[in-house]
Amino acid sequence: MTNEKTTLKSRVKVNRWLAPAARCTLPLLLVTAALPAMAANRIYVANQIDNTVSVIDAASNQVTATVPVGTFPAGVAVSPSGKRVYVANANDNTVSVLDANTNTAVALIAVPSTPVAVVVSPDGATVYVANANDGSVSVIDAATYSVVASVPVGAVPFSMAVNPSGSRVYVGNSGDNTVSVIDARARKVIASVPVGATPFGLDVGPLGARLYVANVASNNVSVIDTFSNKVVATLPAGSGADAVATSPIGLPLYVSNFGDGTVSVVNPLDKKLLATVPVGSSPSSLTVSAKSGRVYVANADSNTVSVINPFTNKVIATVPVGSVPSAIATQPE
Image (cartoon, rainbow, N blue to C red; front, side, top):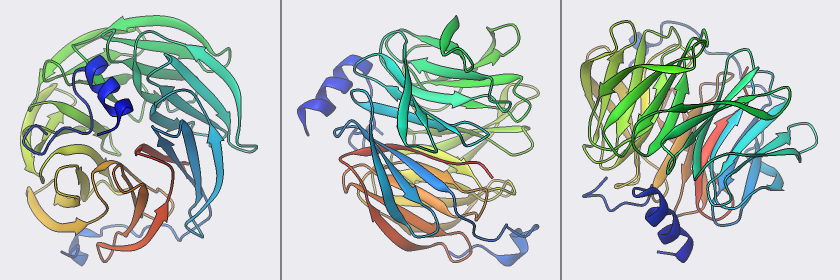
């Protein structure tokens, strides 16, 4: 383990490199809507040790740019317009703002201690940043690049998601095994939902009715009904389930398993495991393209991104990126 990894572990108390102990082909009947044809868009990968973001062209599966950012980038998100990329830099307490057209930094925003996750509201007007060692979420005005509010949440917030309407922001608190539900308009927590052990990844279904929580230490996914804010199901996953993403049509779910180098493909309706896809070493984050349905997996210890075909559940490309890629995001459709 490198010194940089050890530093983040000591500051955040939990990290994406915990040992595993601490942390099929899709049936055609599940494809209820046709996925869009492949079109060119970009995938952004935060490389923690290089302090860079790799930009991958989705059509060619090639890195087309490498952009310097802050120290130890741990989270990345793309605006709904696709024009801005936000990067949470854990070790220097900043958020880098990148122009997606020029692949250059246009702003640097100071936030509290150890920002590790970032999401953007559906209208692109607001950016939310989880500050792990501060137990807070910074609310940033995307027009002025200024912090306009700070919302206290649970212990060691490490992941985030926002619902399709932008009315709710969800925060996975890895230090107390809860999810904080933030009312975006009031900018306050309105519910705290107990989940599995060490929630590390969140994603909201396309209709906003379900929130999926990857629990790295209990090796499963909690399913939260977003109307009642209660856990209504628990789904299987592999060792060290640390990220989750839904397909463009809402199913299946994809779960990256840090401990065994796989991605679980799960049907959230009947709770069945559909496939287990071998990827690179220590997959720590994943995202699904709304354009193609392809799944992009950041493999932290092999310095690659695996590209999974959603119809065959097979890896169709492996893209070399920077050192310790641990966060990944795709441009929206």
